[in-house]
Image (tube, rainbow, N blue to C red; front, side, top):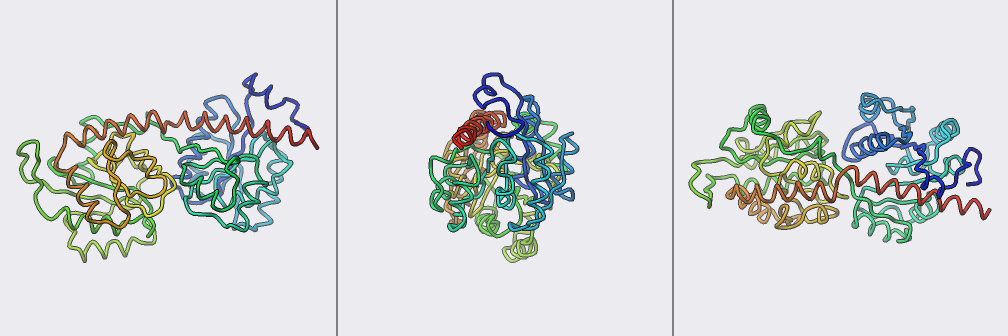
Length: 399
């Protein structure tokens, strides 16, 4: 490729299936859907025989969870997008690591791409947000500062194009879910999960796993619950007695106090409960009949993919990548982002029809395996790595 330490061309590497040396960069301290993807991808690459390592904040949750998974981590704190000290530290780490691929997983990490140029075989960035990035810097950061761009959904790709990113630079690679780790529970696991959260055997249980922030749309869900959970649910598949529609909200964030206040104002104290952050989302998913994602903005929705893999039908707002994740009236229902009545109708329809829940849940599980499996995401990412190495190699050769 023309750079010291890269004696094997990209084409030869692909033919020989030689292991790649990969550095993933994610400096976030919290752990959300993006970090789930970074951790899952790194583990899949290691399993495939590549040398995959992480550059991350040593005080963050990604660091601790990656170390627990026996992934090699190197400390890299990034304060902001103009952190010169972090850029120089990144350059030092890349020189030591002699990596084929540097993969930037967040915007703050991507801003340091200029420091990585000429210190790795190829630079890759993944974009997960469906809003339009800064139009002043995006064309340079995505068209010139890196060799390959991955968007997690068509909506994310479209937002990049609006900002001036060339369409031919973008590859759509949906987020992936470990469908062995996230799978439908057996009767014993389900009963125990419901007991732990205080749901009765006859309750219809809906739930959401998301950060408590305004863009996640919890207010819409509460308004829908106020419409749907005010009386007994009568099944159209036979008499099932008096049941309650309950909703459990898992997550932490700045909107918690406001959400709690709204629960009280709407008289939902009996029907809605906040669980706080969960170490393992399966603690709630195993207890649910219905998963809800009321987000106003969503690149794709890792939490939705995890719920689908667990065999749950999904009620979600028709925004961003959620329109790609959920197949309306097959794996769940898509509703208007401001339409509480429509969401309430979807919840009620599922609550009244256990058979429909089961059918949609099975279809959701199948879609998760076929369309959003972790191994498929890793395979397509590896294809992007190899293609970008070849492009970067040709560029170097011309120089």
